[in-house]
Image 1 (cartoon, helix red, strand yellow):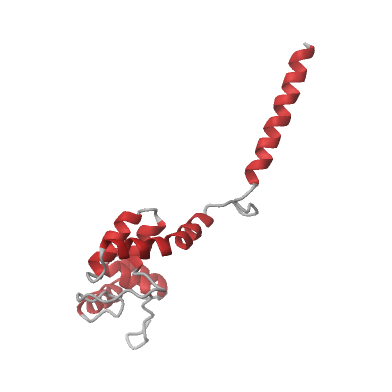
Image 2: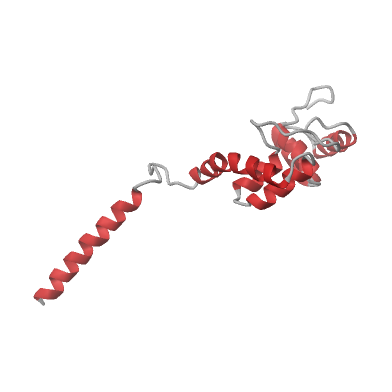
Length: 152
């Protein structure tokens, strides 16, 4: 890849840099730009780290909109850590009181948790009534075993 070719820097690279994971950011940058040398990727990540990152949260408090949550708050909700999510939301927006932060987190918790859990459902299973098949199978096996033991 030539030095003049524009590089594609995906948002995960910025996210890794924000979290201080420079080596992983370099790897992600190289994955996004096949043929990029290790040295060029390292120089690019170092140059990006010194510039204003459009994905880096500002140090000043900013209001949180109703439709979106900061990524780190959404991640805490998705792992079921709602109290920690509310605490972090208050840190990002000091204008929110405890109750308002909890209400905001609870409004967003249901869709995020549903989405996170949906990924664990086996392909072809709706995740709703698949357990009924197993209960019916165990019931049939139990009745069959009882009949077989009663004849013996």
